[in-house]
Amino acid sequence: MTAPASPSGPPPPAPLRIGFLGAGLIATYHSKSLRHSGAPVERRGVFDPDTARAEAFAAASGHTVYATEDEVLDDCDAVYICTWTNEHPRLLAKAAAKGRHVFCEKPLAFTTAEAIAMAEAADAAGITHQVGLVLRRSPAYLWARHLVTAPEAGRVMAVVFRDDQFIPIQGHYASTWRADRDLVGAGTL
Image (cartoon, helix red, strand yellow):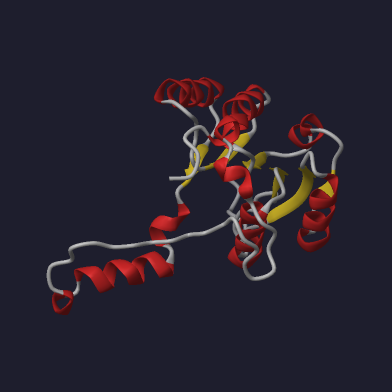
């Protein structure tokens, strides 16, 4: 004879312990999205080589500043990799080796070969991994698509789009790292 099921159902899963590697603007957006999602998460560590930036992120997000990336990876179930592109392959491999699930910001890597190696490392470790292509559903981009595909737009001959992140916008710091080929590969287009 089987015991009757509990009327309240199974207990809820334990909150996912979340860490951040990198504490820049995109990390802030991901942290806010987590908060607004209502997902059961426990905010754990954040590491950024810029300690002041890590401290500001921690104060706003509820994470704790850790001294190394290893401390973050040792204290989380899943990690957001929000660093320069040149760090992505190394950090994903490190997270996968520790069995940590990964959300890695775009672009994933400099080359297709690096991206394939990253996917293979994640698959071999049995972790869940995702690349942050979140702008596909951004309201601004969806509205722009609507504008250029609406019948009244006619035949669109050209579109000029500027996403200038070299100057402080809305109180954010300037981010010239996108023009450094050693950090991002191709540099700003």
